[in-house]
Image 1 (cartoon, rainbow, N blue to C red):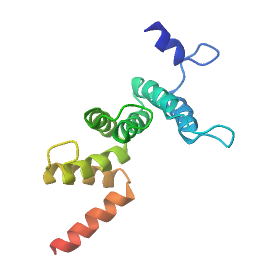
Image 2: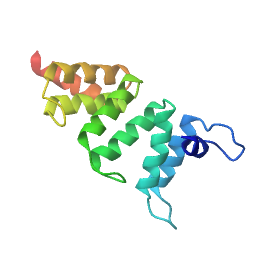
Image 3: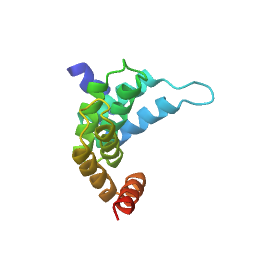
Image 4: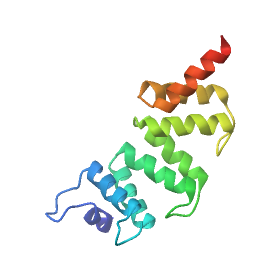
Length: 141
């Protein structure tokens, strides 16, 4: 436990903010010209961000589990992280859960729950969720 705490601290020994942990994960996930992407290290940074309650870190960790990128693919774990991220306000995770429930991907197919997550995503500013909802409302008219 002390080792994990030390990893989540900056050089000065002060706790690193969740957003900075996500930024470090993004840097590893994207790689550089000199060094390719390191998704396993990105997953560790996102895990640390998630541990301090950062919704974006939770959502990005969920995406890695969903794709099996940098971690062993585990859709059940991905759904758990997407759910935590969505409940913490991450619009992308709300959108993904809406799609997962609509398609029955990793969760039982449930169009009502799909609609609820898509509506929450749209309310949180997710443009694709807004577009899908607008199209579905146009089909019902």
